[in-house]
Image (cartoon, rainbow, N blue to C red; front, side, top):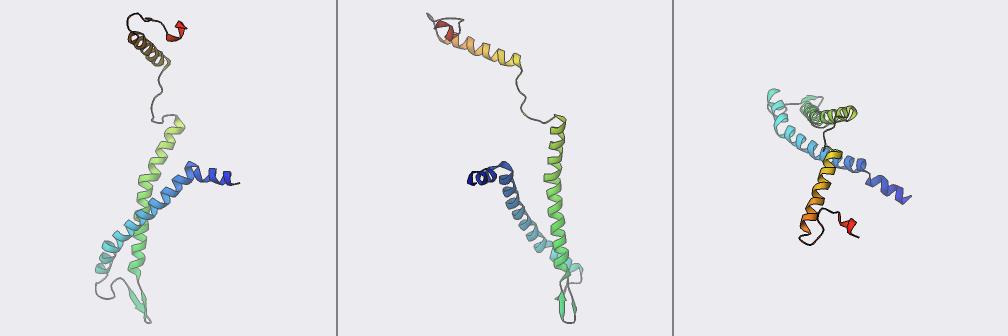
Length: 142
């Protein structure tokens, strides 16, 4: 039972998800600070400024609509950045993977591998020096 739990925790998806949640929370905090510092004051200025800017009072109760508009803008900025910087690139990678066009290191061909083996054997035989076997594979001397 513990082994299964350990396997679950160490799978790549769980670790990736944990990292994404932490980075998402940090990014949301940055966007919230930006909207609170810059956009909310702008909303209050455009709504007339003064003590009750960005809010209205009904029967002595203050309704702060600037905070709501600020939260909507925070959500939209966060969602747009996540979509354009995470979702869209991942869709493109997934499409390429389905078509077999995924960019990655190309595997060497048989000819390239055989050429590399030949060159290594040639280098070994020249390093053995005079008096040693030349042109022969070391295992053949046994």
